[in-house]
Image (cartoon, rainbow, N blue to C red; front, side, top):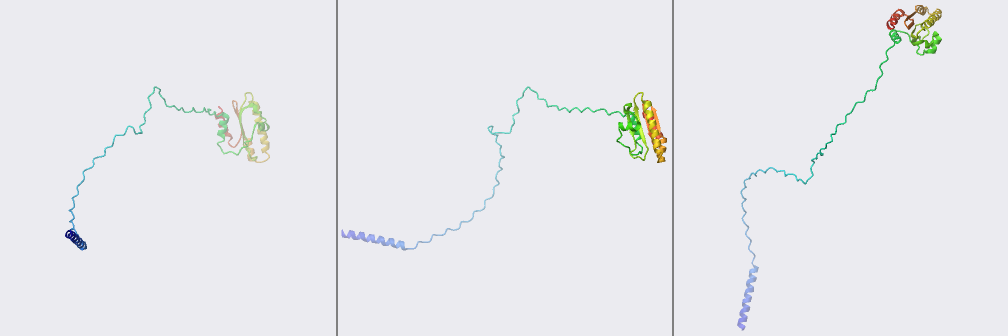
Length: 222
């Protein structure tokens, strides 16, 4: 028994020594693997063409901008017709009277400034003529008292011509007396006055254009 136990102990010690020796040895260096060679470049391959994108059919459930036309009806809608407003009636231009036509012809000449404030009352005071005896008249007296130029053109009421004519003759006599006091050149105009009639029309004119205005009076009062 002792021999067997000693043999076991000797074996155990030998194993311990062997393990110790193995652990004390330096480990061998791991060999470095040789560098691998770089693989050759792979030729580029042209990719195949990508097929055209196919637009998917719209989903009928999605909202769209389609406007649904209104349902047809039997009613016909006519466009509103705009009617231009009727032009306001205009009065026909008044026809120029014969009295006015005579004066407009006379007024084309170079004449002195006239007093525009004359009225029916002044006519009665200066001429002694009742305005009621006249249908229409134009009366012009100079604004300056250094001029004797004067015009009276009128259409006379029936049966009043003699009364109006006599008043104008009296006016001429008063002017001649007035201008005989001074300004002989104006007195000459008064002496060369014209008092003419044509039907119901009469004209009294003291002017340097006396003969010419008589012609115009006869022309427009025919």
